[in-house]
Length: 334
Length: 274
Image (cartoon, rainbow over all chains, first blue to last red; front, side, top):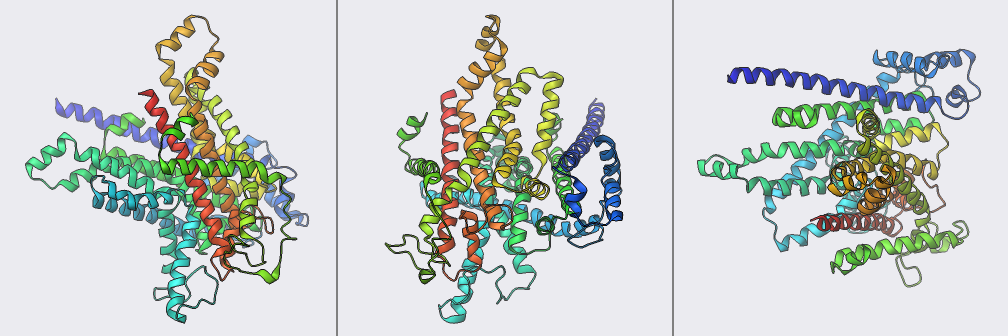
């Protein structure tokens, strides 16, 4: 009897996974079509827009073929999308002329991926630690929490600047006996003990994990969940059994945390763009802004596609993890 | 609605409402103020610390930081307001249609909204700015477009919940036109606070986007026209704190107050429902 039940559940789970993956793919198609349509409906001739007035005739026809401009919008999109799927996103024009967009964008994307994932992990670790450390709400906590709640409103670029200014002030103080000569903010502390590439990366990570209210959101959610979980009946059973309490609680906290990740992901990636630029990290955000500055449309489109694909894939992964942790999610999402 | 918040006697909420009021008043005032950032340059007065003459100090070109912080409200006020209105109007229209109709139309609208929701906002804005001529109006319009899904999802949930209520069914049985039921009985009578809250959130987001883009320097407000974002960017060159610290504080306090007022509205609504 029970084995039959398991069988049917196993089947519906794989169907759900299949459906969920299909939906992600449909989203990807829709989003890339949206970008393609924006390109096509831009005012004026798109080739002129991209190449400027003095592009050669070959470059023009190559570009027209690349974006499928000779066909209608649907056929053109189809051709462009198929080529994009095989990894051909065209060639960069002004940023790094002639280079393959897919290669340039994908090498930069690793930094962005590492930065965003690590920031989420740092944020959730800090939030969890603070929530556990504070325990039950008490009036005196407000002394700490009221100033912290202003983090809710601090954009990550402001956090980044304030953070580095403080570090710089400390460094200057040690160097010149309190007198400051240089600017109060500097992209990377120049006199650093830490490795050169690691310092800006970790500052960027901390800024993203604290900024835009990510940390506060996670903290509030985790605190509320911790309270409701620790008051639940099954936790009494766990305690009565003498089993370790924390692992049981953590598993129940995973789903709400991942839900916040899902809701927050587009915002985190937006923050990554600005913060990478501030710390001049060689990631997609920096690449995107630099390419946009010189109006390198193929590269900007390529990088944007990477970002969108990342959001959709990460959402898919988060949903799958949620379903693995808590099978009830299958019915809830599907 | 507002009077109740005022009477709540919550000091930090009252402070937030006060800040929002100040922003509102200065937003309405600044268009009438004739501020010329070039004329304001006074190189003798560079990098002064705050004093009675220059309340928040001066920046690298001797311009008064206090005046520039105040004038900067113009950079985001009307774009934010318009973006908020557009997002709320279209978002609630789509959400209400989606929630009321259901079926194929409802599902396809929902799919479209989910699609817009997956776009990373900053990335999409920069993409649009690369293709079109960047301006703060364009940025506001695109951000309102990007915020339609979040408004629509909330309204849709509310409409779906209310659609099953007896009194709405009674109105239907009485032969009220569905349009009137949706716009008046559901949206106006039940979703007002929700819509105002979403308007506030979109406004805060446009403020955030405007400062971030102005900070980056290429698409937002350009020097010498002041904006909190490009004033914060002066931290790169300024040897003193004052030129960028106060705009940074202004950003944080304004967004915090907007969010606090929005959250208080939501909380009040919850209490009324119970």
